[in-house]
Image (cartoon, rainbow, N blue to C red; front, side, top):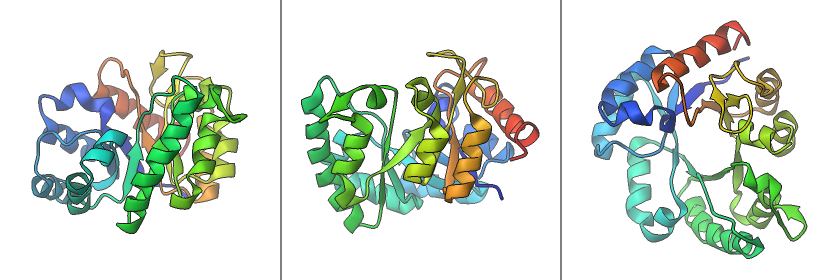
Length: 245
């Protein structure tokens, strides 16, 4: 069994600044099934939906800042509904101290109640600090998930940053059963690589994703080299040839 594969378009941000639609076409040409957005290239929802339908790409999810959801909820979610995007992901939150985790839970509950009522699923994308900082004796990640059970906040596990924080990504996936899994690889710190070319436990992560019934695996590289398209192509080749995925 294999899962559908998407790409977080932040990985292709430099190329998309100049040719948003053309890069969507390259993503489709590489055989990906969907995309996770981090902005929409100035396109209207109708325009973007037309391109996605033409290319056979699914609007999997959107990285949407928490303050955009808090302050511009109706317009933000109307756009997502029109392009057929069900999964809403908060990509980042600052945690300067323990109190910030309590504030985040309260904020996420307010946002999550609206999303739940409107039929969206709600996710939080980690970096390293959510696993290294504590709140009420728990990691911040566990504190957020426990505090937001009412709205079914799910982790979008960034497997590389979890691994960097000393967490076993496959074990985390088996425990929490996330629907969205970020495949990311590297050799430590910000020395990121194509998937399958670093030290992350990609084979075990893929096994756990299949075993737990994840909906999507999503390739991401914050700093692709030499460029996003080349890096993505290598990741896709490695998934096929190294991992038979």
